[in-house]
View (cartoon, rainbow, N blue to C red):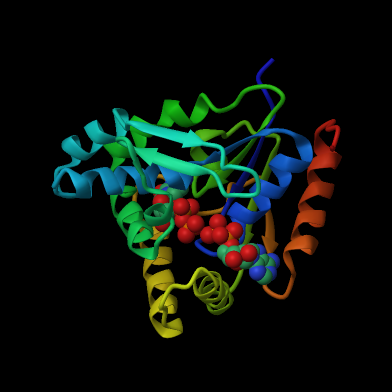
Length: 229
Ligand SMILES: Nc1ncnc2c1ncn2[C@@H]1O[C@H](COP(=O)(O)OP(=O)(O)O)[C@@H](O)[C@H]1O
Ligand SMILES: Nc1ccn([C@H]2C[C@H](O)[C@@H](COP(=O)(O)OP(=O)(O)O)O2)c(=O)n1
């Protein structure tokens, strides 16, 4: 039998990454950060001077990504190595997020990453974070969540997150970037950001992350026999 998959889709800053890490830790399941694959593809194109207009060349980079995901030293975040360089910091910037959103409109890139994402579904189970996890990559998943929040709240969260990391950020610019990315991700022709027909929609505006986690864990426990750690 295939491993169970819980999909968590939604726009930037809705809390997907945080929620998915909490769920994966609680259940002892694998975690797929699909956005990281689009981010790495965008970064690879940038490094190799490949134009984002050249769909075939960007897709070739996506199929051949030379990447390693390393667990962090005790108490440290995990590290991502692209072509031998530690790109963990650069990977999470808004500039890279925008690059990712631009390569993500290219159908050949999405196709090149499809099987790589499905291969993450191994026992005992997978928590999959992205935009099209429930609609395209794992349409048979028994639990699908669409996590959202107002653009203003998401921009505030991102502002706080980046400020805490010591980045020089501007709230109005972050809000504009989030709105632009929402539009590009939702309006693209292939695998647009939208809730799956059978997704549970959770609006996290006004909920803290522990409340979101409790709500989603209840939904998971109601649908799948899980043994939480
Ligand atoms: N429900 C919430 N309330 C307040 N802050 C949150 C909530 N969920 C996530 N955050 C914070 O918002 C920021 C963005 O969350 P993240 O998980 O990176 O979102 P995404 O992966 O959807 O872009 C992080 O700093 C995170 O701690
Ligand atoms: N399954 C996915 C995941 C991400 N993408 C694209 C669209 C997103 O704007 C970028 C970056 O995604 P990522 O989840 O890393 O970004 P956020 O943490 O939500 O800001 O990649 C996608 O098209 N499909």
